[in-house]
Length: 421
Image (cartoon, rainbow, N blue to C red):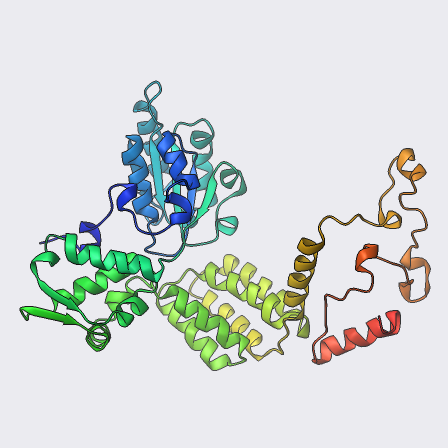
């Protein structure tokens, strides 16, 4: 039986690798490191099918380094230690350090990640981790500080076009068939920037057609995939589409749709922590100051989920989802921080007004640090009118309250304190 097309076409060198030009294109940062023969420990962060595993293999081949691979799904601390012991025995003189590739490293527990620390720090192994999750949340800080994080992006249309042509002209099975590509919209739409998914779709489309001449159209691809949904959704690879629909349903105040997409993720085996983390983000970004309790409840959901586990955790997720979907919405805090960041980038490092600076030394006091600062609690309503922004930004507004009861109350209080500022 022939290997899948995605495996048959797996690149062996950087010149064969498609996409990620910002990392491995001519003169790019990772390419320079690989060409020099020395790389740090790395974490590749990106969606499925963008080349994380392939890049790890190419690096090992290029550096001629021993290559060990573990999957976080079925490996424990014992497996990690066994691989590290093997790596110690294969390290000779100035040879490149053995590479330990850990797929889905975000699924490793703290103790499993702790077991890697010494080997990574001493250079016994060069760690390459692959993750679809933000490593800031899922990788322990000591390990993260010892690794360089590189973000891999979904493949662009031009990358998918190159991959499609390579499949048709270079694969030893496909190039023997008479294949005509009349339309590519469905191929590229269903692949969603995922190289592996595109090749799986081509494999399915061609393999299920017994005719001598095969004509690929949008209609043909759509029909085949409807008959074989697993071809493009194997292992929950619609993960990004569904989480997008989930968040947009909450933002759109549709609790029924939000619970439906939640159910799809639960039924598909999605990581509950991934869902809970998105609820926390949604509570801050989409509900915000219209209902500050939403963020408290989303955080409580996250904490409770870790305490009670599964399957009862699904009820906690449902409660938080419905609460957020039915809450009033505001993105005023989200807009405020973006406005403030834009202004900070535009105006540069404006000095902190002297009266707002700390004065822990006598020299600072002599330089008027903290002079004339008014302590708000000494005044009526715990408020005194004084400047808190740099002079160049006097009277700038970054937060604009939105028309909901909670923010209307905040705006009324601010107007009482500051007038029409």
